[in-house]
Image 1: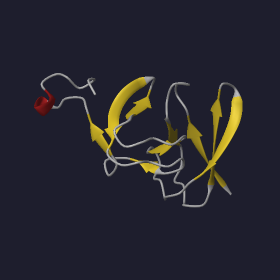
Image 2 (image 1 turned 90 degrees about the horizontal axis):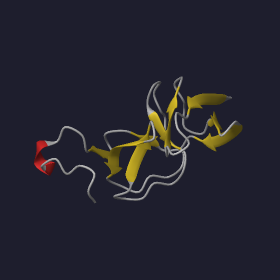
Image 3 (image 1 turned 90 degrees about the vertical axis):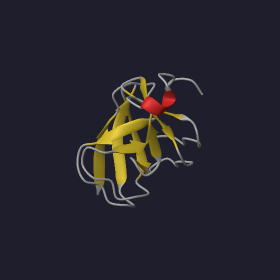
Length: 102
């Protein structure tokens, strides 16, 4: 059994699952017109993100070809990417408008 995900931009390091995925299931998505497959390391609810490659602590989370957050932990390929391991960078007054600086 496998789940499906959508990769929006080839720069992205996350894909969005299009159905609930259980830990241990394969997740299939297209990248540069080639089918890719990864194993889910967590249960991932419909509409949430999965890491399609390793993302290190402090590294940018990229979706839509844009930075949407920063990893607060090392994230392995196949792990659920959400508020438990990502800090948002947009709309944060505490960053003084410097969300994209590392």
